[in-house]
Picture 1 (cartoon, one colour):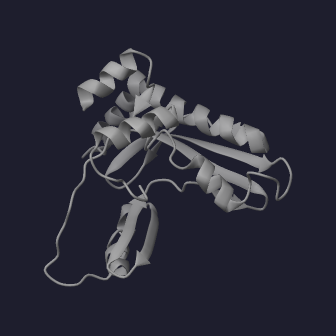
Picture 2 (cartoon, rainbow, N blue to C red; picture 1 turned 30 degrees about the vertical axis):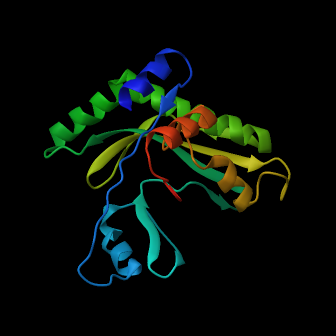
Length: 197
């Protein structure tokens, strides 16, 4: 699967693809999804839980929100590139510098940033992007850029939460670029349905 992804990138069919693995956990007794979610609170991320039916849940802790709308401002982030946290301040700083010096990780962050900027540029105005910085979480650190915009027309097409969710998700950070080609490759190669992910 990886060799085929690399071949398609070399041929220009894909710019980026994010592959995943399926991992199943079986518990010896019933588990309340909310209890699991609350155990993730110390990971310093945005918690989410969807429980479409009893006995089924999609939950996790993400370093970034997909987006936020507050006071007529759309806010999101482009996060790509990861390193662990160092066990000393010096090692932590070295890992952050290595992350920022990585052409691969900076390229991937640029792909995600450009995708979000282009999408927001179609439905919003005053799109602003921060400088690159390292977001430090409990166990890992990421390359990050904050992106803000104002809806071109309050309540206009493409700016409701539902419309933004459908447009932004999945970003290149979790799928790839171009999104149609990456999504097709993922569906044909991984052998399982990612569901909400």
